[in-house]
Amino acid sequence: MIYETKVLTRSPVPQASAGQDKVKWRHYSGEYKDHFSTKATWEQLRTVNPKVWWHKIVWFSHAIPRHSFITWPAIRDRLSTRARMRTWGLNHACLLCGEVDETRDHLFMASPYSFTIWNWLCCGLPGRRIPRLGDHSSVHYSAEHWDDSLLHRLALQAIVYGIWRERNNRRHQQPPRSVLLLTRTIDKDMQNRLQAIYHGDESRLTEVTQRWSRSTSIPS
Ligand SMILES: [Zn+2]
Image 1 (tube, rainbow, N blue to C red):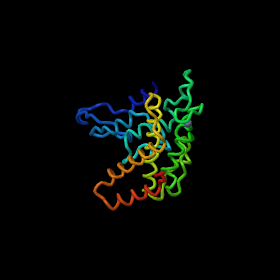
Image 2 (image 1 turned 45 degrees about the vertical axis):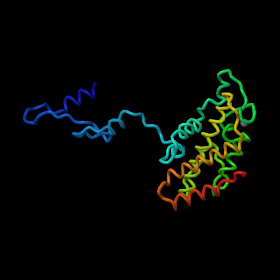
Image 3 (image 1 turned 135 degrees about the vertical axis):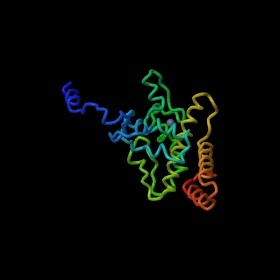
Image 4 (image 1 turned 120 degrees about the vertical axis):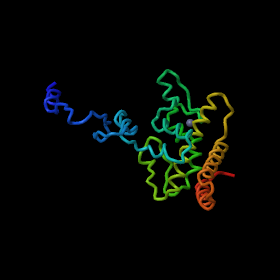
């Protein structure tokens, strides 16, 4: 109330000589301008959350959207794994190997089925370890080499998506795919994606595809 009174007493009394009233739009910086800005208005309305460490792993320009939309809740541990479902009174084992606790880290990393996929597809990417989804330090992509960073992120998303899909297929009584078959499917997805990204640039496509092939060790 005091503040309002001060504003009122300090504000100049409207006078015809000061010209006509104008409509002004408040911008994010706090300034008032003549024009409306959607961005400035949105920035004032939205809740700004701090940047999370994994945003560049999930959202990047060459990512496949359906892969990103599974990787996102996987990293946040928000997928309805059996361990999460147990809190709702449902108790089941890992559908890939039979382990009692189907936690996020077990399903995507530690399960022998999943670990084999990581090993066959990513072990050859230089300077990389098999990442753990919840561990900041193991999924760090300030890569010296852009191609490796891109390949690793694409592979991470393709693998997470492939494993999650396989797990859900099994849950719905579909015939299980062998680890070799799923690995080959993911490998094919990767090659198709690289072709789409480097379409029209044959030399780059060859270079990156060869780089990818060298990183894999899929049994023939
Ligand atoms: Zn398992």
